[in-house]
Length: 232
Length: 245
Image (cartoon, rainbow over all chains, first blue to last red; front, side, top):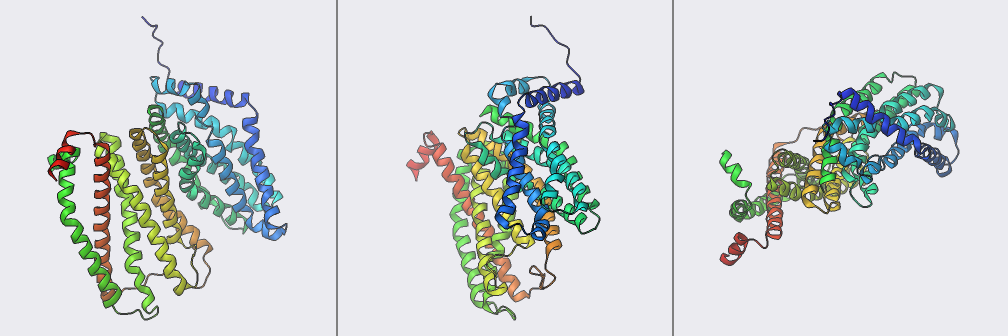
């Protein structure tokens, strides 16, 4: 007779999965540092491509920062479930007596803390580099904080759908970019509104709404997609 | 009625029914398209401001309307496939995706052709055009996802998940693009201004929309029949049908 372990509470399952995934991400610091370096370098490409005129850069700064954050988020989404898929732990999670949606959400949250959260934190630095006025910097960070949560969740859906496909990274981007458009629009509008001295609260509230909605709805879709990938 | 829908889930029954349906729907469709095209392109009066170049709306608007509706057909088929695991719903979804993509492409292309003489530009980033472009990306994503999976059953389920998430997103995307456009809109002409349309132009437009819905139905049914012929090429009922026909 196999020994019966008592079922953990949902909170305990979430915490265990969260810490486990966070530890595995932090075990390879390059997984945290590389997306930030990508963000930094691609932002540098824009002045090189557009010319160093500070007024033009400042006008384009919200868009540039947000688009590059979106691209960075796409790049890291590729690896979200890949390592777990490869070593078989994803299959174990699917078979476990705990909701896959919950455990998947725990992984996505750990992933977000290592990528989007840090990106949002350092974004004012890059805003300054592009000449974004001071009023916009805090709103940039807040909009990216909420926005990257949406982007990570949507990216998790893409990752779950493409984890079992060869060269799935590009396909992931094709699937995910249309879904990311509202987040991009709201985020840049919030920053632009703050820069001109208006009130960005309504835009931030919209991103917040998207983030909360994604937190509730997307883990279910992610779990369904993971099961499809595991079955294929 | 429920037994009818239940029977539709069986490939041989659907094949027989769709064959009979297409047999009269196809000529009806051709008739509607010809009648609508003749009425719209030749009979309807020229526009006060745009002259004869407005006539492309008789292709542009129906294509756009059916492209939008087609996404919901795909989503419904996907939901049925996920919830009740009905194979025919998979095939429906697979059949609709490329048709919807092509219709969206036609809408965008004819829109550009219309835009050049009227607005002076081939492409304008206004709210409706941008939303249509994103709809095209959503359709192409479903087609790409389907091609990427080797196991076609899993492919259909993955596409169903993607389509459903996309469906929830479509109102959000449309509204966000709308707000994006109204923020950045130059204060001059409103490109997507609503103007009242005269009934002499409205009726041919409605006829063309009906014709395009018919075209959509015929194309999707033919796609589904082709898919069935391929997947069931070894089965007895199909061989018997080929022997009979």
